[in-house]
Image (cartoon, rainbow, N blue to C red; front, top):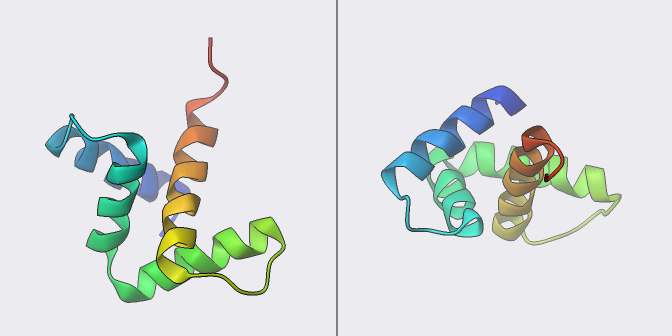
Amino acid sequence: MTDEELVVEFALTRLDHPDLDLEDVAALVVRRVGADRMLDLAGRNLATRGELRGAAFPSAVEHVLRVVLTLRGPAD
């Protein structure tokens, strides 16, 4: 899953659940993409952080948030 696909998935999930905060939306995205993609996202997050181990679900959620917030650009 590319970063662009991840952002689209996040945006669509956010449209379905506008009252949730960003972390909850990211958690829904991770649940929707399935176990294999969750492990991929978690692995990418741990590689970015330079860590060898971590809990898969929270690491995957963190990666989704990192991608979304990075692509949003700086806050005005």
